[in-house]
Image 1 (tube, rainbow over the protein chains, first blue to last red):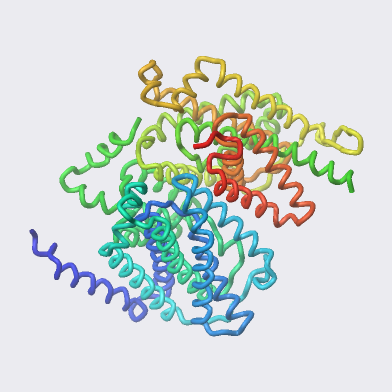
Image 2 (cartoon, helix red, strand yellow):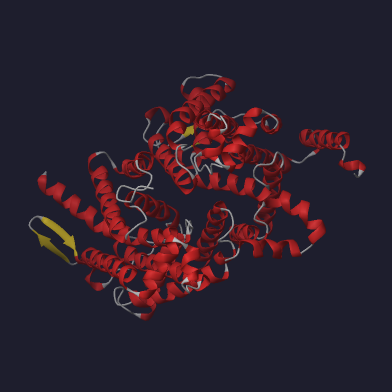
Length: 320
Length: 288
């Protein structure tokens, strides 16, 4: 085994990378910090989705609901009740947990496409309900008290991402994590082996919701504005799925890498070729699904022995 | 009050017929290819633009132009399936969602670049005409769109039940391996099925352009509605989709009248979730 592949080296590299990331507010430009906050929050969302979609195998389109609830938790607590930011985050998380526990039990009975569509519908329903709730100021949206402290938001987002990644790391080495993977691979077998599938699925959904809600809360306070359309934006949910799947779902670092890579690509595109950036993003997705359907992590691992034939072998394996 | 109610129900039925054609294409592709086509709404949008250009540039009546729209969209669908989607059909189910989402993004941006973001509506000379049945007033255009929708549903049903190709499509939906053994060439058949689904999307887009307005961004919500209808009606037969479409149209109209327009989506998607939870195979579908 090559020395840089051994565990101490890997940990050292991780700590270095983390230190470099944490230091960005001291040496980076304002633009880089703002890009960082966005990319970190998206990475948190991708990791949150990874728990329910990547490990448990339930393709949730409802994670943007948690994100919206987290945002509205902060918004309502700060604007309507004059509470501090931390209390708002806690309120947002509480909303997300209640949502995950009550509706999770119902929709997690469905599988595959049906689960995806039920959660998609839930996010539409939530957006429409919130735009009719007086406490959330209906369609007008909420304006939060501004806090011009980008380094604070940056470090907060970074801390949240580290917490999410650590959480996933711990899960993958626990009974709970093995249970989730068993559910993904074959739910009936998992149940037969004594996994309490309903409990595990609801817990995974809730955990995924907590991280998404925290990301939503931080984003709301950072942007200082919230309205139902942007808070429950379905394209955000699609984004987090693409990032997780692009990086490698069901791996500890895949979604993180996918999120940073795609954030950088889309940032680069929108600064270089403004008008067709979105078009190019769509083409990247299409090409990625055809050429590397198991994600970036798998591609990097298998690229070396196979070279360009890796892509051809993927196409051959999945075509009709 | 009774007059208002019957008018609203009539509007809902007319809208529902159109919804049914939209959902029909999605349900066909979903049922046979097991691909939930997230770009379905984008193809509806393209069909609408095609009809708009046929009417305002070529001068062809929107209803007479429907066959041309159908043929062009069929060809587009065939090529997309044969050249792209056939490459990933056997991959994980999630990849088909992602790739069709990518396709949706591409189509939407192309439409935005080609046609601008302005709202377009197809208004033939008879757009203002209407017929009255008792106190209910029905615009001629909506009635014609509804008639086309009904005819298409019945026609597709007969096609699937009676023709050789229709039988091959249904056989493939039930068991790909067995169908292959009986001489069905799946690459071609998948492409034909997807082409049919896209042709239906295109025609419904052309009809949508005559009763409503189109812009490059209508795709996503129309895809969501098509989903809802397919789920309510089940994927088994066109009749279910028709009932699902009418149901959704009426519910939307009634919700708009009695509770408020902002709640129309709550009603339709709330029903979708309820149906899924209570009866995952659809209200009219066979038990899974």
